[in-house]
Length: 532
Image 1 (cartoon, rainbow, N blue to C red):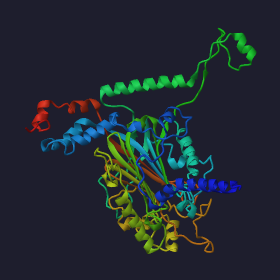
Image 2 (cartoon, one colour; image 1 turned 90 degrees about the vertical axis):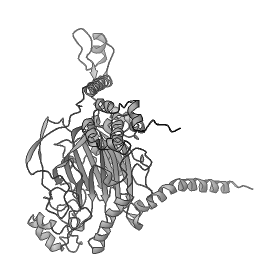
Image 3 (cartoon, rainbow, N blue to C red; image 1 turned 180 degrees about the vertical axis):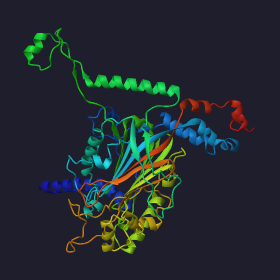
Image 4 (cartoon, one colour; image 1 turned 180 degrees about the horizontal axis):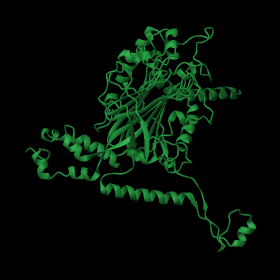
């Protein structure tokens, strides 16, 4: 009896079942929004940092081990200022910090855009959005609805097809930035009138000059080490970029049709490949349904970034699905802990929607967790960090009618609009700082248009709002600009903010001196005492 048809059916069933079984954990993981592994993100590999032709790769986690000087410094400073030393030493912790730490300034560009599920053309110009006229050291770029929020994308497996397109656009834009000048003019804005409780630092409303961050250390030995590394890097670049051809006689070149003009002595000029190492490299890219965050830094800064951790929180369907929620990234830059949060909160204009948005923020605070298995005293929650930037489509609206809102927009009455801004009167972001909102509401526009959705009542109506926001929390953060870009790809306009942020950087020589403790001193503190 021929049972081949049964065997074929079984094989097909088995193949399909295997595929479903392989995908099932990912789908369940997505539905329940189980916290992601801290290393569950993509980044440029070490090879792609060295060779820009390599586009994709997973971060080599070996770069985050304890051999890195910045990591050692972070651990050591935390140790010296924690409870590990006796009380007499802890009283002097700030003195220790002052003796070990130097300060640097970094320019950080934060950017957010709800792209409405639209796939961008490959030649999309985002230079104005990223403000490339004033190059930053760090670019934090957050997207919402990077894929359409339909049932298949929300409940099915992750659709990441638009990600490479966006990353290629970002990579091309950043690595075509012209070399910056020694000094750049920066214009800061005072915080908007609001009921947000101010943080301790407000930028002055004056024109000032800001020195660009240079890769140098105050300690002489570190300066020499960095200089040697730069020389070696330059030599490697020259070796990689020059193709040494054999010297051929003049006749060979004339007969071969080679267009390279020979030298007088009959030797050809060297054929120089103009490939350069990229100015910026990707340290984190992470997607959760439609929310996506990608962080790019100057290549020279990459070695000073450690302890990268990612935490996702879904607050959408059933309170856990990731169609709404947050992706938070924790990292230490030099010896300062940063947290970048990209969010998409509940939409809608009803009173119940306002309550749900504030609840979303509370859930993100509660459920965002980092470094849960680390023995090192690193930040565990959002507020544990020293410098925090929160960006995204926060979806807060105005407590005004459509007609009242449109009337105030027509008069550019931004301060009056702020008086009815739900974000500022809701209390969810008390203590956070926001720059001056002196641009029109960023939502909602008709496709490929500068017309707000709803001018034609037959089409439908949405009250315009500043849905797309960028907030900061922490000391030493001076905001330089806050603006929107006029790109008509989606029904939102992209928003950007730039900051000068102070960071702490330790001196290796001072640290080694501070950690030199004699055996007698250790015995005095009871570390080496053995009870009989």
